[in-house]
Image 1 (cartoon, helix red, strand yellow):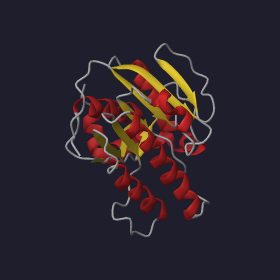
Image 2 (tube, one colour):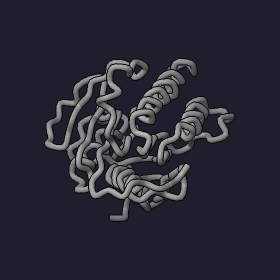
Image 3 (cartoon, helix red, strand yellow):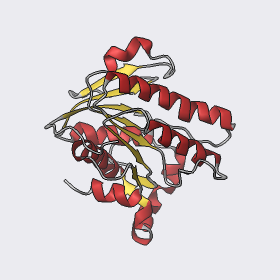
Length: 229
């Protein structure tokens, strides 16, 4: 897999998960960034946001994309931020949502946009061996591994840890609202475990524009790439 990326002045990006914290944060930063010319959000329900750069495509089921392929073509990157907590889910159900839906969406994009850069948000602690004790980490690890086989121009896996929301974000879980105040503490005591949403989004944009020598970006990598203009 080549780490290269198209040398473009502006890029057209697809973002999933914009109704969640990570996707919304990435979207807001993309709408402000001069290198992003168009952002298409793919959701199951409307986001309720209007912007001159923004288009929205409602897809009820990521396993049924036959009628949407033409609307997903012509893009340079996909920032796949959709995801769900494994809490309370059986492994089969979590695998369907995390692995099956993601791979089906990615295959559709790879066929429509073979020169695309695909960036998948997994998470700190993802298990690349796919054999560990943590179910969610194994499933995420398998997802990362199989995404790399789809033939994208560039495929990268982001493993963020604690993230600080960007100003204006609305889609925040109660856990973040309860614990978000601890971000400055983590930033000082464990800087390689915490990022801002701006760093995550800028890292995605920079990796799309310039490539990166590693397919897996841990928090340290995300913060370094996301701090470069």
